[in-house]
Picture 1 (cartoon, rainbow, N blue to C red):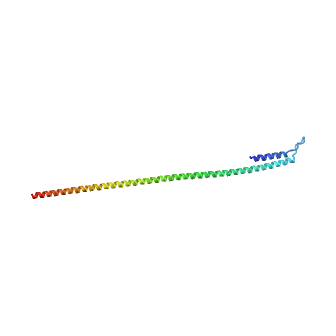
Picture 2 (cartoon, helix red, strand yellow):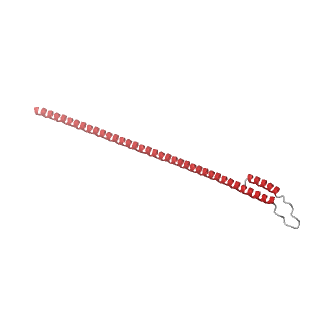
Picture 3 (tube, helix red, strand yellow):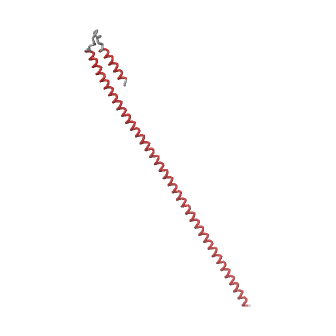
Length: 167
């Protein structure tokens, strides 16, 4: 009950108290209902009805305010939930981007490693080819030297035979 309710009630009581000053009952008889007492009952009933209406209106206002507050709190809750969901989505998007970036870096690193490996293999093959070419050149040079020595020895033999034949 509101303070206004109590104030209205005390005003009603004082008004009723003034109206209810009934003359004392006659000796030996019951008190007759007085016209002013009936009027006081009407005033009390009217005041009670007015107070009930005021209380109903206050209750309705309070319920409406509670409803508004409840609606506002529901809206706030929904807004918070939406913010939390958006934040969660943003975080998961960041995590996904980070994963993609790491995967891309790993892929690039693997490609670089493979390219380096291929380059080293190519260099090794070239070095082997160069080594084989040098060995082949050395073998040819050796064959040529031997052939030259053989020719020189054959000429020396022929010259020796020719000299012997002359003798």
